[in-house]
Image (cartoon, rainbow, N blue to C red):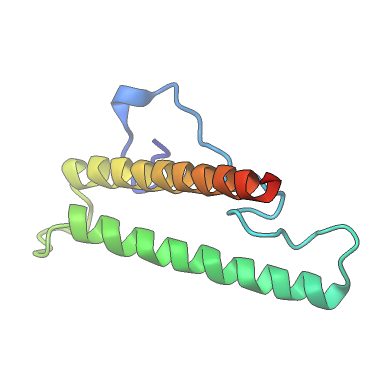
Length: 115
């Protein structure tokens, strides 16, 4: 999808990288650090919380995709084509699922707020 790990998903050349999950200006579903009307301490706390969430997500992504795609025996310093393709697909699926779960939770939250 993105070619982040040296490969490319040749089956999906027209796919564009998606916006971060949550659709907020600050990134991955967090509050965003630039909330209008928030005092600086609250902005800092929100930015810190968002950074922790992004770091945790990146760590989980790296662990899951490494476990699934990278052979435990390192024969070469470079990724094989198979490992690279697997990593690209794994990252793509991880973000797709993350977005779908976020969208579903947002929808459920809006339904419960209106009830």
